[in-house]
Amino acid sequence: MIVRLLIFLSLLHRSLVAATFFVAPDGNDMNAGSKEQPFATVQRAQQAVEPGDTVNLRGGTYLMKESQIARRRYGRAVVTHLTKSGLEGKPITYQAFENESPVFDYRNVKPANNRVTAFQVDGSWLHLQGLAVVGVQVTILTHTQSICFDNQGDHNVFERLSMHDGQAIGFWLGKGSQNLVLNCDAWNNWDFTSENKRGGNVDGFGFHVPKGSVGNVFRGCRAWFNSDDGFDFINTEEAVTVEDCWAFYNGFGTKFESLGDGNGFKAGGYAARPTEQLPKQIPRHVIRNCLAVRNKASGFYANHQPDGNDWLNNTAWKNANNFNLLSRTPDNLVDVSGHGHKLKNNLGFQGRAEVTHLDEKLSDAAGNYWNLPVKVTAEDFASLDEAELTLPREPNGDLPRIKLLHLVSGSDLIDRGIEVGLPFAGTAPDLGCFESSGK
Image (cartoon, rainbow, N blue to C red; front, side, top):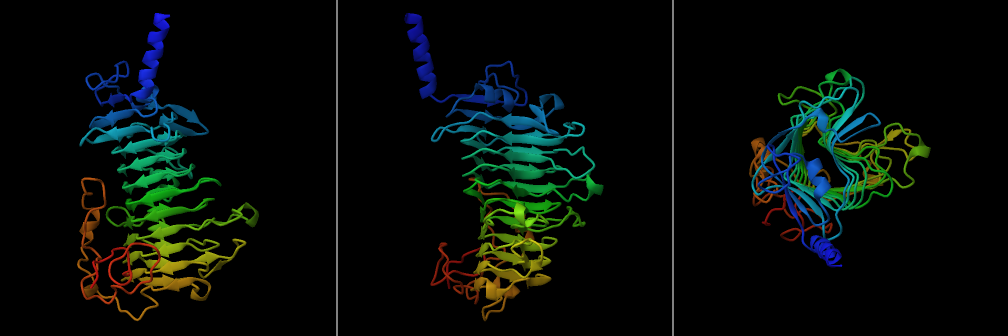
């Protein structure tokens, strides 16, 4: 009886008190997972955690091996597979320890004839913070894709993740509801292996979910020098909100050599899917307070969307097309000028083309730089220094504080917008993604 009571009390204590585990590059999965005796892998840490627990990842390079692949199925090799869920109010947290920088390097993970996924998250109520993934490989020569982070669960938060210098898509949201991708960076990702090295399938962030995956948000994220697009939402069954995100230099290599498509925000489209395969209700994406700079193709692109999106308070500068609203007929058969779009308070400057393929009579477009009596010049901006785009983030992970494309006092672009439910200073919203303090 006493033994049973002790076991019960031990289990009760474990359920009430969250535990903390550690993982380190010099750890050992036979260890206890303490700070003094850390595990070697996140996969081993997952075996130990329960809802409410925290896994602290020590800084340094984790040189991943093929022997660490957790699952091989359907031509995919998942290296770290997070299947265990937390609970509402008791998430499982995998985080960088204090100010340290854990970097997971996949240069040696090259499973033949398999797509590689560095982290696949099937669990729900998880919080991943402060991890970097580099060097993810591609081994297939035909059309393929590898992925740094793949979300399939619900109520997850992905914060301050870095995905760079690999051949894989940075972040792929493939399923799940109420997920937040917050203050993450994806850069310099190029598939130089498949499809004649074109890199035509490597985006910074991808959103491609089935019906029922609702309430997902990308906030405060940056994508640059990805060989295809910065943000890509093609072939998705549900809508996504993208806010306060930056996309620049996509479609180019680091020496501005031409690679893939190169759109900043590719918001929609279903390629050549027949009518019967389209969603019964075409998702309406929201793109607001976002910045697109010098992308190879379009800064903001509707990508043949059969219906419209909401484009609010965005800024485009030096893209081939700053705003390309190309739509398609409801049967998805014929390209037509953009219809059904809501466009408010948008600002563009120095695009090779400014606004293309927009049917304003069939859209709700007002308070934008192209249909207001304003003139946009370099003198409207406090800075045109592109180097500010890649400045370090703030200590809390927020985007860097910059002057680039911020409006100067006295600009006629201040207070010229239309109220759309977003915060603003002055008598009315300014044009573009950066609100000034007013005149």
